[in-house]
Length: 235
Image 1: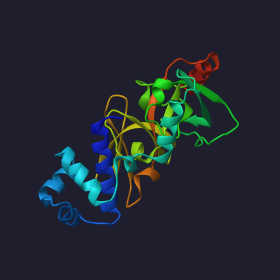
Image 2 (image 1 turned 180 degrees about the vertical axis):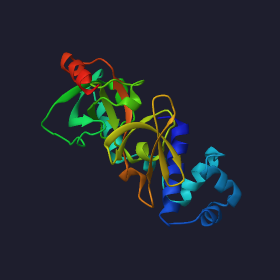
Image 3 (image 1 turned 120 degrees about the vertical axis):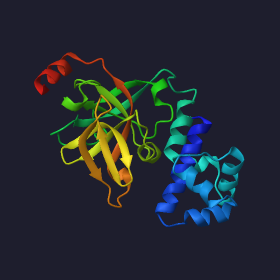
């Protein structure tokens, strides 16, 4: 976790409060003593708050930087630094099912398969879970099917979209792995070549986390023998 990400999380929090009607850009500017145009430019990503202004906003809202973290994220961080933990690897539950077009949405299986994930890939991941990918022609440049992905289920990871990140999207064709571009209340799906696929999802006032199920933080392209056979059948 770095300072720039804390800034981004503060913006996600402020946007959510404005969208939820807790206050407006005008009332936020009045509360913090910042000009409304500056607040507007920061919220749309054209400018950034200085560290002093960011601290002032947190104080006005009676928050601290710890409030920008999910509770489970803090617990996971403390657990990873416990002297009793293996500092190299961690076992993560694997969802039951396959991520991909035409597949039933995978479900949690608490007593099911687990996958060994390097601890280095678990930094800043909240409620990690692994899943297996099915064949997807739109994403063949990134994966072929059968790979294992590590998923971050945190609200922050699913709300603040990064252009080069992969996300699990709930669509009419199942749970798809795609890059995303957000245009107001529309999510535009993009393929491995950073080209729009033509598929969009209208939020229509829904919370984005109802559609974006997880963020992909790690993809392991080393597959098992059975996975290779699965990928050929999918093709």
